Length: 72
Image 1 (cartoon, rainbow, N blue to C red):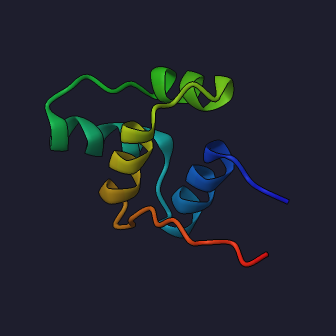
Image 2 (cartoon, one colour; image 1 turned 180 degrees about the vertical axis):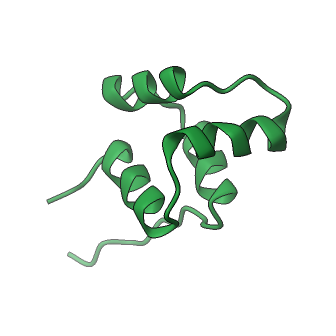
C-alpha cells in the first residue's frame, strides 16, 4: 500500500519532533518566501503540493527524496 506526500511529511514531522508551525518558520528562513501553516496544511489536505515543494520540505527537515526501482 502506497502512502502519499501528506502521510510522508507527517511522518517526517513526527520523526523530527517538529510542528507544521515550526516547519513554516524554517521554510520562511530558508527561502525568504512567506510560508504559512494554513497554506501548507491546505496543500497537504488537497494533495496539491508540487514536487519541488515536497523536496524542499524534505531537505529542510534533513532528508532527501529517492526513487527506487520496484522489482517485479
